[in-house]
Length: 293
Ligand code: C2E
Ligand code: MG
Ligand code: MG
Ligand code: MG
Image (cartoon, rainbow, N blue to C red):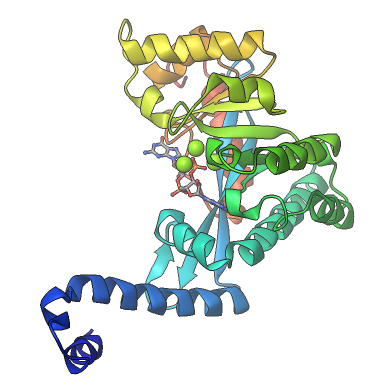
């Protein structure tokens, strides 16, 4: 930052008066982070965590969402919100996205070999569509790992539908043609438009956790969640409620006919080696008729 400041002064005039050191620092930090991220891609410093998703009607873990973390050599585990926006802008998202696909398919193959039927959904950013993550690359990864397409799902957000509507549409159609379910993530936030639900091939809506967390019997969030579930059901879509943090929310969602729940009440996202054991624990807990639910 000091260097940039000197440069601004050296270039003369009034420039230094307009020079904002915090902005320069932010830019510098970002460049630094981009370099670190390039190295992270080369050295495979990423790891996928897995968060269970339970089917509410039969009280069992049905699958999981894969959530990326960056295992930084000095700074430890960094959550995706801190680096995904940067890799999206720098184009690194395509390489990372392919790594996510590969790792998810390997994980599915391992679960399959262990006799588990859990499915896995991966998050796909708008920047990866359509060329960063070609449907053919997904088909290829599944085939190489011997995983049925129905075991993998892709989570997209409404953002991808904002520009390049027709490209997004054909990407989604191609993915669905392969037999891979498409989830619309964070539903209810952003620029939601109900027309998307008709225009895009979707299998599942994930209701954003903001609605789920504020649900109380009789309040408007409760009504909204109830209405979203009813609408989804009548359109033939499945619903996952995100951010389920307690038994009361789980109960309300079950009563509303929500298909799946995901959230800290079941488990936080965890490393692969903890997943199988944890899924069994959750199944046991949910099977208890009293208050585990
Ligand atoms: P998302 O796809 O909506 O994932 C759900 C986020 O909510 C996760 O945050 C998860 O840890 C968190 N969460 C789950 N249950 C609860 C709960 O009960 N309470 C609260 N407060 N939070 C809960 P995380 O892992 O930090 O991921 C944040 C976002 O980063 C994701 O939101 C997704 O948009 C993005 N992301 C994660 N992995 C990837 C990836 O591999 N590729 C891309 N492009 N984006 C990713
Ligand atoms: Mg997601
Ligand atoms: Mg979400
Ligand atoms: Mg999100």
